[in-house]
Length: 441
Ligand code: ATP
Ligand code: MG
Image (cartoon, rainbow, N blue to C red; front, side):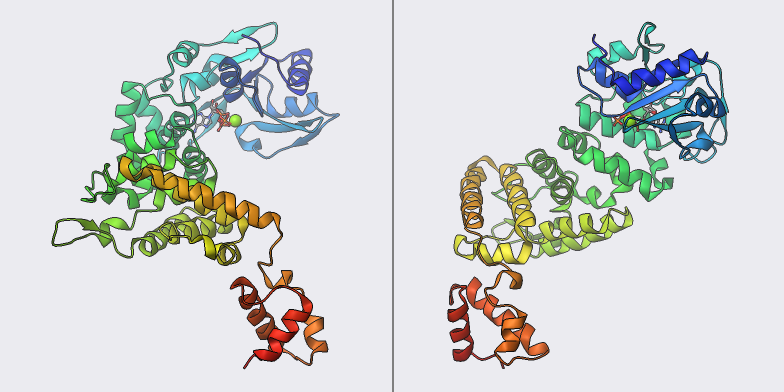
């Protein structure tokens, strides 16, 4: 295995070791190297106490963000390195915060407090790999296993349950049997976690390459933090368009969308309003009239409860609201105007994923969506007029034409409407004439 450490990480290990301390890279970056990936950030663990770390890096910029947990962040040539003193977490009375943090001189004890065996390995050039809990073997087998007794580890910090699902979604590893059983048994503890911690893990989970699989295998666990999912489990849609129950359809839709946060969140919630909109017609066929709006409302509530950033909430909700819309090619400019190009292409990506999760006979509808995307790209290359700002006449021109105050906005809005509908070309003279023929009221 090649550990091609970033020079800054190697330098930091050297500085600590030369000052007489033990120092290792640890956790995610070691795991990534063993998977043949280049890590993007490095965590270091060391026998040095926080003040000793700061003394060793006295010539460098240090930030004390995690100081009370023994973490010092050092900025070496632009790369932030999180350096943490070997420590043991005390027990926890609320499954959220360790009651106390105690420093230790033992790397093994530091490894023992880490969540999963594959995240509990340390490495340093010249010293080799330190793997106390069979992390390498679990990595080779592709499984997620808690360090120690999973039930106890989840009781200490319930976030580890979500982290297990997050790593399962991003790495494609299933949970080892006892870890999975404990995750189910302790899932209720997730209720006590802060929205911010849940959001962090869910956001990464949903972008994982196997997010759909995780959704399909652990809906009851996710349902503790996303109760919107619970009525979807096993719901038979009684519809010719669907060969899967509602939750499985949702999982397939997630799998068929690109891993961008808003699109994935939209895929996750796009049909969550269906259970409450379900009706059967006289032929026994299921319908879900009004479900996009209802899903959008439920998603808006869920995403704000989880404190996703405002613009993420807004885009996801917009995508959900329009996920069932039939976009006519002749209305492309209108859609681009309404949503903006980026959200418009995200909507097509969502519709594509949703379509590929339908019953096989209906999946070829993606061809129409792909054609629409190509058409929209071609249209955008012509730099069409999509907003008031793109009009060939601006506010000053309108004043010169004798408009004042609010009339200006009204007139420009009217012109944009005419251009979008193809009733008038976006050229100064034509726009002027159009206004003379159709003066705003
Ligand atoms: P990523 O590559 O996604 O950053 P990571 O493994 O580095 O993955 P982090 O959240 O950055 O994940 O955490 C760094 C390390 O800290 C983990 O590898 C793990 O050893 C330990 N860790 C983080 N959170 C917990 C936790 N809640 N309980 C126990 N150990 C944890
Ligand atoms: Mg990390």
